[in-house]
Length: 156
View (tube, rainbow, N blue to C red):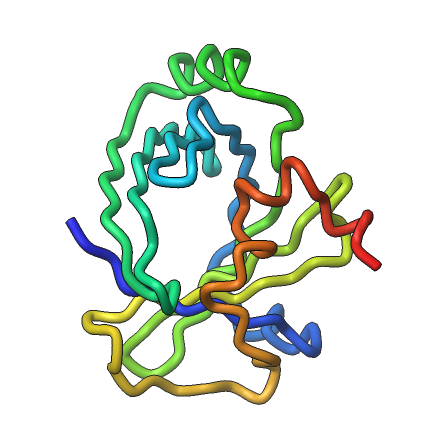
């Protein structure tokens, strides 16, 4: 299944007032190859396994398969993941016909806030709220898997 996603930095905390839900997330990676990633995630009280393929050159489109798994299995699989485990809070913010997922990172990535929006097609028009900052779609530094080896706190 293909997903079309764009990522942006966030320039204020105004999104928090618009959030309809906040979800605590822990995630790790069983596989971190350039061409494929296998992610394990616990989001709230649900477990997930996700397989992602290589991104398009612009970073918007990639193949992704995501499946719900028992939380106990997700916890056991997180123990098999390469450290560290990424911790963040996800704010669900509806805007127009789409929904932003705004991730506020913790730990070594504290201070990083990224808004993602999934689109039905790469060129789909969408509402851009005032709190949306610079677009970072395709910038691999902002991929969660990259934040394991080069956390935000170590950037210049």
